[in-house]
Amino acid sequence: MSNAASQFISGMITMGFLVAGLLFLRFWTRTRDMLFAAFAAAFALLAANQALAALIDVPREERSWIYLLRVAAFVLIIAAVVWKNRGAVALSQRRE
Image (cartoon, rainbow, N blue to C red; front, side, top):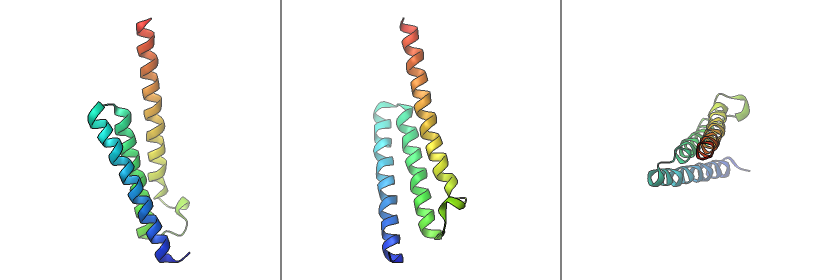
């Protein structure tokens, strides 16, 4: 694949991450549920990861510092889901 096509696809992926993040941000403004805020932040990190990887033109992304943005995004998602589930369990235990 040519470099121009690769750059174009990276831009489209970045745009997709940003759109997903904005949708989660909109859900957060309606519900004030922190899970949606965490997902919005995670998708913003994924967009930054994709954009930087394309702009800096790193040959092996998994061996550069940029990869830490992706790791942080997934850790944020996992932490938010665990936090949300622990809150739901605590709430159900209070009701019993």
